[in-house]
Length: 249
Image 1: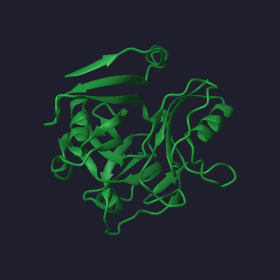
Image 2: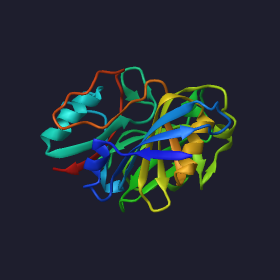
Image 3: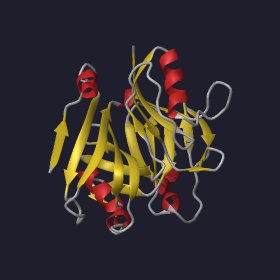
Image 4: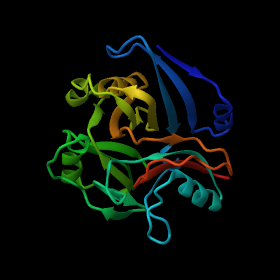
């Protein structure tokens, strides 16, 4: 069962027709204990989603707070900030990174260990026509779509409305987690679990919320912030790429 509460930030976001911000309490899902699991949800139109790695000096933003300051200086209202795909030491994306139609890191088709390389892994992207999509790395490499932004990670959690085998089999390891999905109406859904949750449980929440496809972004380092204008954000582990949901002030 999913319950959505209304907070001051929820009420603020209702002013934006294409953005829905919510706080979810999810109970007893996917074979977990009866203890409540708390998730935060953001739903946005693709046009409100942007991807950021480096500032104007070519330095990684590293902190959500640094990105918040920059975006607000550009006259944008920041509705959400979160880390993007898995990354390497030195705050460099492990896989494909496309920002403002510029490819900064190429598609990673190597084999390896860890969540990024769990198959199928994939790419979340906005295509040149503005639509949001998630494809497997293999399909993305074969089709080479024209994209405005893209972040690569893994594993895929949901494909065509069904939990992937990799996610379905992951029922033991629990971590805080974040991910991104695409709904049937084309909107983008972001989820973040502050409490430890299995990949299967996490994937199941995307399915329950109507995601047709969903991609795991990262685990215990993950963060999601819904900033108040001008209010500093707490420090966290340094990130590479970050995702923002904004509107023009």
